Length: 359
Image (cartoon, rainbow, N blue to C red; front, side):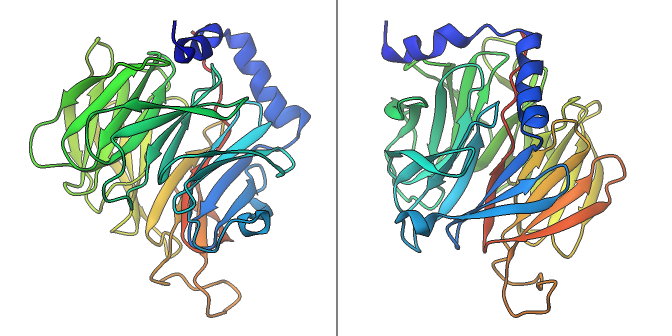
């Protein structure tokens, strides 16, 4: 039995009671449900209280010895909020922090990008950055307690899009260089490959529906949102929606009825109704400046979208000359913007606690 399987197997069965307790730990005992937003250019992580939409703290990674060019890109959070993780593209590191924002571990990995945490085991999956021209054709798998890393061959160039499907006990990775998706059981080192039709989509990121029936992925080059049926042994593309504007990091609402997609090149957010797979709304706002990441509050009431604002189209509220990154909080029911939170430059990937899922 490989070490991968040993890491993954003991935690695969969890009950709805355990899932509810994890949520109590995050929002009850601690009193805060926190959102962690990486600011790539400023090399910081903004910590936002999702109950108040207030910035709680800015963790400056440079104060821990990392350079001004380390490029903080994406985050992941434990189900109980006890630890969080951030990838540093140029530094080649994945960092582990505790709830008090103290650095407690790190792992070396060449040009890390997307992070996807399996809340039902000790595994954290790591993809490669889009900025990497020719990275190794492997993804990383970290044993979170020890921060020990192993690599899994995916056999295609530039693995980027990455997600864990807890219902199906699988992970998925996609190539930026060709129309290929790799998938395997969690903890498995032997992947299967799925080829996609048409021109190269350059899939940026995936999201899996809460019931595990569907996965979506946005194509940077085509502007299409691909819909995968995950019910079979082999995932199958069954539909696509033209959303345009380089669909970036999508998120499903907890009830699975909607998926929210930042359109990085259009400064908009597309809302797709998954019951009909049609576009429900396209949201615009001055603070949606090159929207990148997305996250959803645990109760599904608020959607969060990060904005890079590299071009400086959004001006700071204090009238200054800076070009802050943004986090836009949107009411999931009315689609009205309820808060704009200014964070470090080039706000990129973001994560809320990875809630456990009952089986």
